[in-house]
Amino acid sequence: MPPGKPHLDGQTESNASPRHERGPATRPVVRLWITGLATVFVLSCLALVVLLRSQRRVDLTSQAALDDPQIRELVIRELVRQTSGAFDSHPDASVARVLIANVQKRRRGDVSADTNGIGLRERDFALPKPNGTLRIVLLGDAYVSGEGVEPNERAGVFLERLLAAQAAAPSAELEVLHIGVPGWNILAECSFLRRQLTLLAPDLVIQIVVNDDLDDVEGVRGFGATAEFTPAARRHADALVKLWNPRHQMKLPGTTTNFLTAGHDSFSRERFHRANEAIVRLAGAVEERGGRYLLVARWDGQLAEQALGWLAAGLRPEQRGFLRRSFVADSSTWITDVDSFWNRTGMQTLAEALFHWIQSEDVLPALALKPATDLRARSRSILVAGEKLAVVEPRANRLGTGFDFERLDPDDGFHFYGGVDRRGLVAPWAAFSFRVLAGGTLVLRGSGLGRPELDGVTVHVRCDGEELGSFQVPASGTFEQRFALGDATDEFVSIELEGEDWVLTGDDLRDCGVFRLASMEIVAG
Image 1 (cartoon, one colour):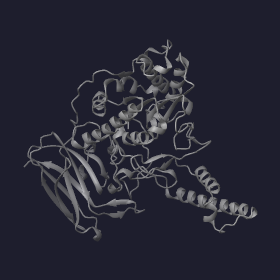
Image 2: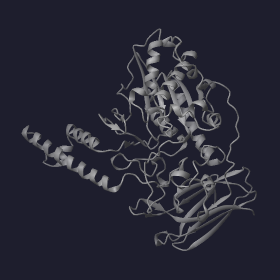
Image 3: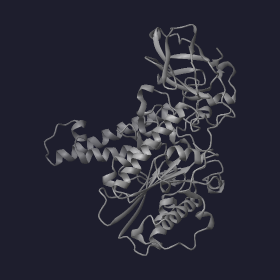
């Protein structure tokens, strides 16, 4: 999540559960449930009246009314109208969520939040693609769906106009579609598109990836709010891997992100590897069906070329590019001074850059595109595509050898990938990163939660994916466990903890805990 990008949960800390910032308050949710149930009841009664008057033979129950497709559709539409949430769960665990479908005449903040029939912030489009249609897909997350801008101010709208205006051989039907959902990661984006590819049949896919696209994707709980788990790893319960966990989960002042995107340890590299596999598979599938593919990295800091090198491994040079830092860091293209989603100017600049690449590389020969002489000079230069990438060594120079919850400082936040909260409550799964000492030993100190259900529960300890050993959690009292790391060859290692069982805790019993962590460190010998 780039600087200033809003936390998708939109939650605030409570003393009952600091692991995640809480979603909408319980009381408004209860009111929504009451309103929804009342609506269902009223509509069901009306439906029964209609059915009786038409002398249809039905079982006089609410369920019988809801079994009628037309009545059910009316009920769903009314519930959608009543809820303030944005998301709907998706049965594909890799996708995790889409937007609530068929939302009409709704505004979120200052902009329209209408959606189409498949849960995208896009107009309805035909599936399968009709003959004679030239279809371009912009694939991504909220940067593509257009956080903070009106639908007609997004990059695809400007790009579609440019293509139509400059086409010497206009297509009978030209579409540039925004396929993106806030909070999606690379795996979600690739899965959603690839698994409908023959229906969508894009002639060109431009996938825009950002810093936090290695994060877990939260699921959805009642009335469209984001959940505190990822459907892709339900065994992890309420543990979420997030680039910005040091700020949002650990609440450490002065700390922004961990080193998830640095590629310095096996955990980070594995995230890049899985994302790369999904990208290469999607790109290959698109080209097998006659389309073209371009991966565009919108990455903060100095790591754009390094990240693109890992994500685009296996792609041809002409299939990958990155946006220059001068454009990424330009706050005049953001929706606010602190929210780095593109505003209208940023969207238009991006569209012009994409058009320049499409036209100069003759990516869509069917359009016989003419150069656009009025493109701004900057738009021609912000997208670097097809060039040799610089080799940048992974940097995690501020990462230490351990932390202690009694003395946490901002730099300690770099250790935490996810699965532990500010109080040290460890979820059923947790992951950390450390600097290695040659021949070192991992020392873990903690205490039981005072819950007899946990007495003797086994916790597995892994280093770079390989099991170091395990230990049994006491119901109460403190403990110390030591695990020899052996001859580690990397400068950094990742440590994972996984419990075989857990208890429910917190005021609403939605926190899952195994033990309380006091400290972890790698010591010599």
